[in-house]
Length: 222
Image 1 (cartoon, one colour):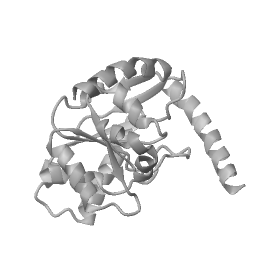
Image 2: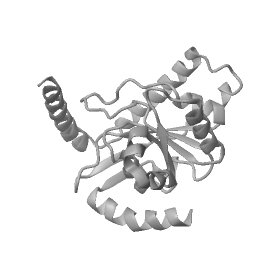
Image 3: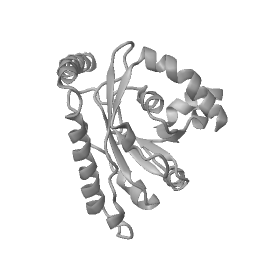
């Protein structure tokens, strides 16, 4: 853990200077205990944006292809909190690892959209799983919203919401209906957080996101 803290301290300052971010509601993330931190997803650097913005070490799921391509650095990714995930065939071992992380009192960062949002919509449809982890480990869910990807020398905002307590559902069968209800509650809370981003910034970002989305669609259809 001491090595992680050294790396965090050395890299955090230059990262925050190059990719400035303002955290709204930072104190809403519990200082201790397991937490499922659920966020919107705009860019590859999102875990770094959150990791250097918040005070607790974050464990996050990453595409297993990234770990394969990383070679000898795959171990470094794991040390920094990365957990490989095969999105096409998520195995039981991945679920067990995530639940173990939570039961050990750590923070599990999830991007339930399943991929980067390249559209102008505030959120893509969420994939199931986040509520299941919270129920299995008996920990709260903390919603977070990030409107934009990290961009060099451009301010960004992360909005952290208050913890969502699902203890009333502990012991109940986590069927599709229950998980769908809880996932929808998290989605609604995430969209509420978007409203806390300053309107001047949000208005500019909407224009930029619409332009980027149109360019991406054009590129795909070419």
